[in-house]
Structure formats: C-alpha cells, structure tokens
Length: 262
Ligand SMILES: [Zn+2]
Image (tube, rainbow, N blue to C red; front, side, top):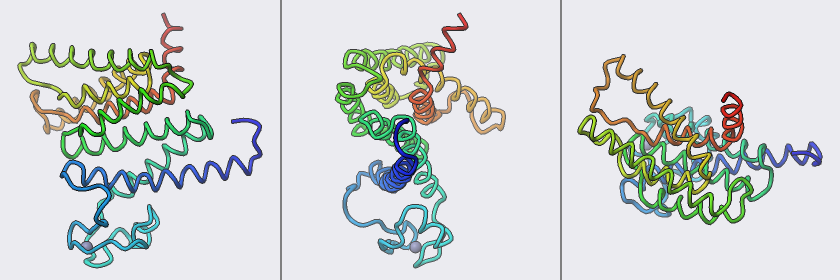
C-alpha cells in the first residue's frame, strides 16, 4: 500500500490482526463443533475436560491462554496448544491479507479465503473430513466474490472450480486403478473446486502442484518413520490448504518464474 500515512497503515494492520485473532477463535469453535454436528452459535464454549463454562474474560484470543498459562481456570487441565496456534495463524493471515491488498474487497476476500483454508485444514487433520457446508459454501462464496475481486473473473472462477474438481477426480480415478484404494475423498474434490472458485484456473494449478509436492514430502517423511503404509490415508486437505494460501499470495509470481524458465 502506498499513499497512506504510516500511522494509518500501522493502525489498520493492528486492526486486521486483531480481527484475525477473533476470527481464529471462532474457527476453533467451528472446527470442534461442525464435525460433531453441534450448533456453532450456542451454547457458550465449555472446557472439554471438566465441562465448566468458559467465561468471556477467559475467552480472549491468545491473551487468555497466556494469562491462564495454558490451563483451564476451573480444573487446571492443559488447554490444547492448537487453540492459540489457530488464533495466531488466523491473525497472521488476516494481517498478511491487509498488508498485500489493503482495505479493499480483495483484502477481505483474501482473509476470508485464508480462514476457510485454515478451518478445513484443522478439521481434516483431526477427522479426515472436509464438511460440506464449508466446501460447498466456499464454492458459492468464491463464485460470488469473483464479481468483485481484481485477481479473477466470474468466468475464470467457474473454470477454476471445474478444473480443480476435474483434476482431482482424475487423480483419484488413476490412483484407484493403480492401487485399488481411494487415496482421497470427495471432500478433497469439493475443496479444490472451492479453491478454483476463489483463485481461478492458474491459482488452482499452482495449488494442486504445491499440495502434491507437500503431500509427497510429508508421506515420505511419515513412511520413513514407519508410521504410514502405502494404503494409509493422509489428510490431503491440509496440503491443499497450504498450497492454496501460498498460491493466493505468491501464485502470480510463481507462474511468472515458471514460464520464464521455459
Ligand atoms: Zn476444565
């Protein structure tokens, strides 16, 4: 961003980061409740160990974790590090969206897209599941957003969603012919379709390339440690989420670097 006074930029960046922290707190709730079929809006959060209600003052993103030294106020059981990690990650992603795109529709959609990728990654990591409300919702939001953001067009969004879904269906089919197992689920297909709706064709190709790379490396690492066989399922949604966020911020540069190599 250029032209704005430094104080304005700094305040905006701080504001974006704080909003991101609060969104992260909400993503934790979604990631816990959605796979369990619980309501996202009610009731108030409870400690998973002692079921004590978590008071508002103990529910401040990051700060409460630090003040409580990572333990429940009532029972003293440790709070999973995942909670503050997701809040911090969301804060960083919202800050990055602000720094790259500023106070624009681009910035807002970028931040929302990052939040969607983050919550899908957490749920996939713990449940090997990518819930329909999030993937279908992402497809709808991406298509709607393509009318206002500057990095894609509605046409590109539709093609992106189709290319994303088609490419993964093809991969799943080939993998099945080769190994007689389903390497990925339809959740992954819908998730990459959502990525395509947000980022368009180019961003989808970059996402799939990066996700395959990260997934292959992670797979080899786990196999080397003897914790994974050929038929084990990896949370591919986690790798898709990583690839998608990198693609959002660096995709055009990666494509330019790649085409200059040819
Ligand atoms: Zn407790």
